[in-house]
Image 1: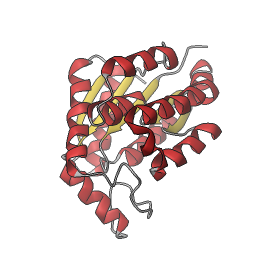
Image 2 (image 1 turned 30 degrees about the vertical axis):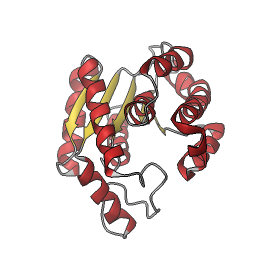
Image 3 (image 1 turned 90 degrees about the vertical axis):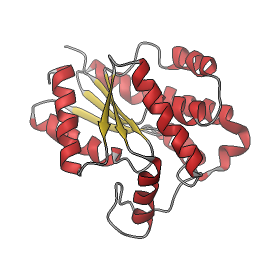
Image 4 (image 1 turned 120 degrees about the vertical axis):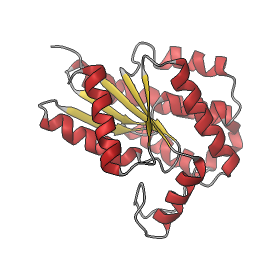
Length: 219
C-alpha cells in the first residue's frame, strides 16, 4: 500500500486555517482519498493535555525554549500515535499547524535559536516532514481584527466563541514577527511551502488551496 501524503497549514492568528483544513479534507474525501484531520498542539490524548497547558499561558514561566520543548513533547506523541500510523495505511493527513509554528512562534517571535529548534526537529520529526505546507498569509492587524470579531460573536475566521488564548492575546509586535517568520520559512523552502493570500473570501482561498494541492501532489 502506498504511503499517504502529509499536508500542513500554517499562518498567523485569524488566518482561517481551521476553516480551510476542513474544506480540503471534504474535497479529498470526495475525490476518494481517506483523510485524517488533526491539529497541533494536540491531536492525541497526551498532546491535547499539553495543549491545554500551553494555551492557558501557564507555560510562559518556562520561557520560549521551555514552550518549544513542550510543543515537541506533544508532537512526539502525536506523530507516534496518529500521524505516522495514518500515513502508513495510505491516509492523507491534514494538520492544522505543525513544526513550522514552533519555528515561527518560539523561534522568530520568541527568540529561541534556530539551531536548537533544528535539533529538536531532527530528533522528533525525523523523516516525517510535510509533503506540502500551505501558509495562509494575512497582515497581523487583520488577523487580530478577525479574532476580535470572533470573540464578540461576529462572523470571523474561526467562530469558536472562545476567548483569546495565551498566544492570541500577545501584542501586535509579536504577531508581526510571526508573519515575518512564516514568510521566511516559505522563502527558504519553496519546494515544500506555498504562500496564499488569506485576505480573500473563504471560497477563493479554498480554490487556491485546491490548486496548490492538485499541482504539487496530484490527488
